[in-house]
Length: 401
Ligand SMILES: Cc1ncc(C[n+]2csc(CCOP(=O)(O)OP(=O)(O)O)c2C)c(N)n1
Ligand SMILES: [Mg+2]
Image (cartoon, rainbow, N blue to C red; front, side):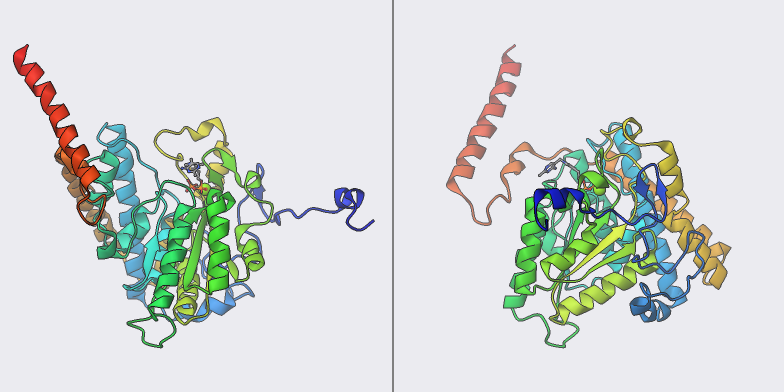
């Protein structure tokens, strides 16, 4: 019977483990999840899942905690401003990261300057950690700049909308780092690794799976960082995979770890360990940050059409900022003055980027032909000339009528 269709039909099929489910959604990630803080910010006991990372968290100082908290709050504020500006007609679109701040800040802050990140389109928190000015992000979604920033100035690639595509770019880049000999030298200033960000939906793409195969056989210095926010637009997890992403890594030939994506300490520790291993020449790791997209997919989406308010309420209780604040208050790592100052800084940042966005000039139209090739290109130049003449013809028509 083994292997016959009848046996296969009767065989039990794997299901996600189910400690806590809300209307079909697993909400705590199960026992493999690396977590240091509970929803209130209490430090959890050491267990099998978090033990390998405990030392990294114990070595963190109150100053480290304050810096992470500041990042979380400022990143949330940038996001809220992006959303508001879109609603006011200042931006074409905004994909909100609300709820995913800890996943992105924990990952972004674990990186070293020489590491390189390849984002999707929602990684505003990683952009912040790579010192990309938030104004540049807003400018891109306003449609007044082409991409937004110089990737190589920040070691942060341009946003990629084609789902999963950046996993291949990241893998190629990581293989290049290997060929430059910048892996496993033991020099902390030189050894480098790459982070590739995608979502749960991205794991179903061909590009993603091809990248994992290449990264594995090349033993590339790479960390695949999957933000499992439970939804790919309106498609829930169970329509994307039967085995969760962190377990699938093993099948590609490298370790996978599931981390509580709403616990910034856990994300930081897990990512740091994976990046250290990659820089050291130990090859790729896949991190699945188990989190939730609290807002709509983008400002063009209405999630009330496909998911329940009860599910969102469950995740609201796991808020990453509330959790970190609770931890810091319990530990005495910060007082009320600190939290007030951060809120004030967030207000000032929001006002600054709002005004900057509203005042952004439209670009000169011919600049859309800039930066297509490194060197001037005759076809592009001909197209630019034709385009300029075409536009000038409207002005002449206007002058005649
Ligand atoms: C190759 C490709 N197919 C389809 C789309 C349309 N699309 C845009 S976002 C998205 C869902 C992605 O979900 P996920 O990877 O979970 O990321 P999230 O938006 O949840 O952060 C899809 C299908 C696309 N951009 N690219
Ligand atoms: Mg998703």
